[in-house]
Length: 145
Image 1: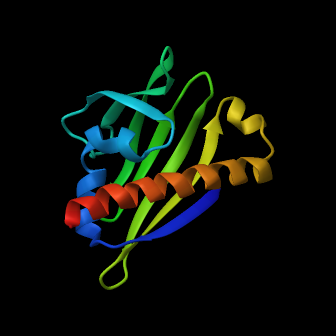
Image 2: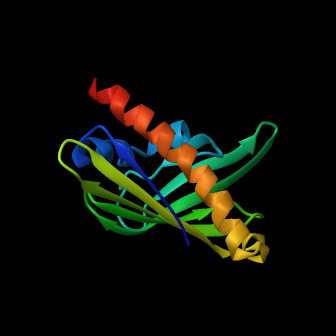
């Protein structure tokens, strides 16, 4: 699994507030183009984000579902983007005084993504998640100033 971390100048509660608002995901998740719907129970186990991936007019509609949740600390998601496949995305928050270390651990779980050799897959996911965490930090820190 690819693991990427970033320190965010905010409390875990402030980071969680952004993660708990499913409508904000296209602002920071690389590849997410638009949000079509968010289940009212988000981020409870089983709740889904109904999103599109890609660039218009080549958009793929799919979902991301909460597999596990530890309120304010961790989300394990099953992200789908068929026909490309699906992945487990584990987002965790750890307080470090006046900042929060956000960690994303991700790997393909089904589909063509599994055909990419793991070392190459890990590098691609890591690069993508560096940008995802950079964007998440912009959103969170912009809301706290």
